[in-house]
Image (tube, rainbow, N blue to C red; front, side, top):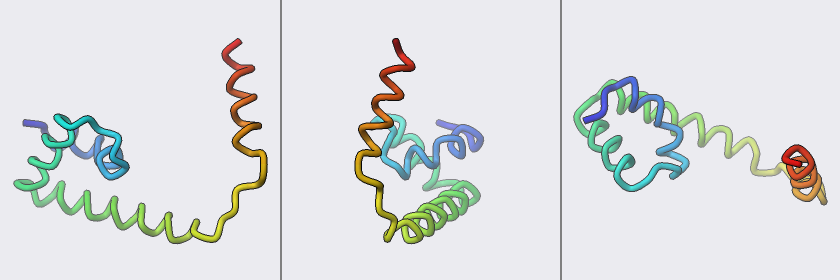
Length: 77
């Protein structure tokens, strides 16, 4: 069983669906029994929802992904 500290460290990864199945199940299991961590998870979800709503009208400039990829490629050479 994961402790509260570890669960809280992984909340955003859970909400962004970046955890593997096993770790995700462990975090969710903890949230079922820990009201404090469940509240923290609800707060984290509310924050993510707020950020997503505020970015709905944001348009990525054309070519941005390609420029970022070039910088990353150059940094790894």
